[in-house]
Image 1 (cartoon, one colour):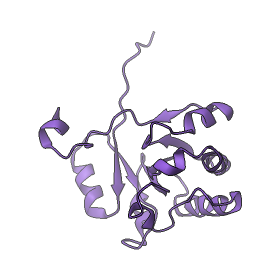
Image 2 (image 1 turned 90 degrees about the horizontal axis):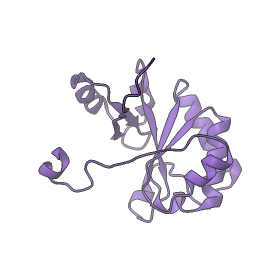
Image 3 (image 1 turned 120 degrees about the vertical axis):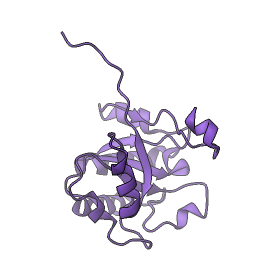
Length: 170
């Protein structure tokens, strides 16, 4: 009989260049990079996923921060189903082997039931599994996952919420 062992998945968000990816690989432990879709800083980010067995796509969603909302092709709460579908199809073409997507920012988006449901529908249609970064405790994704009869996956803990090495190490 198999013993039930605790499982820990470490996700490193905001991956946008080869140097960052190489530093993760050098750690020699299983760490899952969450790669930004192509953006103005690097229009070839999708190529970072080539040859990777485990990775996520770090999808920018509308935040309460105007600065964060300036990211290339952020998905906003006022987008129609058609606009969201188009963006997720685009992401699928860029990352044909990807299984998982987590949200970059998205506090405003994840609190909006209607918008989150449109996104969830598009993700399922394109074969993605969503991991809620849980940028807001008011996120609607748990409720939506249940409605779609899907397992809800979420971030349990940000290790770098406080920019202090001792707190991060702890």
